[in-house]
Amino acid sequence: MALEQLSDVVQRCVTLPNDSYTTEDYDVFTIAGRTCIEEGNSAQVLSIVLDEKNQDIVRSMGWNLLPPLIQVLLKKEDKNLSHCLAVFNHLIKVCSSARQPKELLIGLLEQLEQDDPEPIAESLHLLLNPLQKVLLCLGSRKASSLGMSLSSVLDQVAKLPLPHTKEQEEDDVFSLCRCCTDLTDFVRPFVHEARQNNLNSQNDNDELRTELLKFCMKTLSHPLLEVQLKDPDTLAVSPLRNFATEILNTLSAIGEPVPSLVFQPLLKRKQVPGFLEEEVRYPKESLACLAHLVFVHHLAADTFPSVFSPVFSLRCNMEHIFECHFSFDVCVFTIIQELYEKSLVRVEDGSLPADLLEIKTFLQVPQVNVLRHLLLCPQRTRGLKVFQLSVDKFDTEAKYNFFQYMLKTSNHSGVEGYVIKNIKNQIDFALRPGNSNTWFEGVHLLPLLRKVLTLPDGPETDLLQYLDRVMESLNLLRYLIIRDKVTENQTGIWTELYKIEDAFIKPLRVGVNMSRAHYERELHNTMETKRKESVLSVSVGDEKLPNMTSESQIQALHSALHTFDMIESVLVRIEELTEVKETH
Image (cartoon, rainbow, N blue to C red; front, top):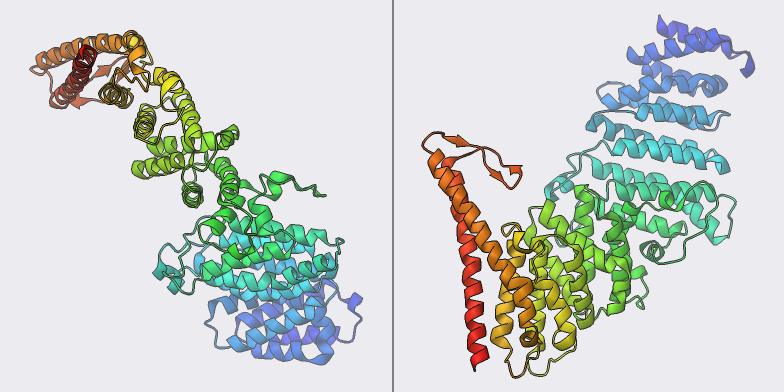
């Protein structure tokens, strides 16, 4: 029945001019043709659409048969699959050259919309080549349609799970690798056209470059920002690594050299005509991903002039790192960590001068990085390792200024304690024969010591909260008294000691006594209450802690009292050492 209706409408319309087809003709052709395909009569449909005398009809109405054809082709179960594919290819060929290729384009894009990974990958594999043919038929008017197509395709790619292991990428279990390869093939002719326009200095099709740039920036943010690329030693042939390389090559081809993009924060901003603002044209996360690909994975590294020193590269990358450091996206945080570490490793120890600290990123990135690790991440050790690496790259004056900044602004006992430990190491180095410097001994050192040897809130300082800082300060003071002779006084500690007594030691002793008395009273009350209740609510200061058993509370109070004993024992030792030194 459907086949007869299709034949009848074709025979009737074949004798009519194109503009004489009625709405009823279109409806009958579409419904009858779809039914024939669904009922397995695709061989007869193929015969009709290939008939030379029917080409005007096919050109005008044929694209309406694409949806059922695509559904059959995606299922791959129909015994007439080869006939359906032949019909599909012929319709694309004929309709692409028709007067309404945009309608065909929109129809194909609608068929891309899928929800599950498997049909997404299959529809992209099937439809990207037809989409390319349609776009190429649009000539110089293709830019906006290309942008729309790329946006739709990338929205579909974003739904695919990412491979996390070498085996997943090798087996392409989620088909992402095949989609990336298909996508590379899809954009290739448009990239070639943009390259030719650049070579010929033709700026009349700048929209094409803009759409390709948007595509590259979007792929850098997903999937490339979120995947862990495998090194060649781990995976010799990596589709995702190849895809990343193609994206970088595309950027160069369209007049966006990779070095210029990496150094974008330091170079003069481009005055680009059009609607794209700088931050939209070059998203910060995309540029950070780009720098990560270059400096961590060494992609496109051969495009970089050798005159770019490691220090200059670090300065540029610090801008990318700082821009993304406040992101709570785990993938963003991971890539900027790797970028930061790799950039630091290339720099010679002690080579960063103090004037670089006038650039805020050289102060803020190490600080934010270590605070982020200590406050939010389980990888405290790695955070401290990278922080130490950044400290090691500064010269002596830069270290001095950086330590002052950290003590003034960090407001974190753990970080301040680690900084004080670094100060002790720098003093120790300066006091060794042949290593004398003006920054970590004598008059320059004293202002730094005054910042260290003080209590944030005087005698009322919460000693448990500030334990790291307090203990490192005491260790530094003990070291100075042992290491520096009264007669030499290289560090100035002996002329400053009376001030340290008033500003640090006496308030600390009062604070220890106050804290011990408070916790001993809490321990006594808890021991008394233990006989009455099995679960207690504990308050420290004005804050109520979660309910805990009396045994847990008693253990916590004993631990606090042990801490106060430890602080007092160091204080006593410092007083003993001071008396011995001053009497000899």
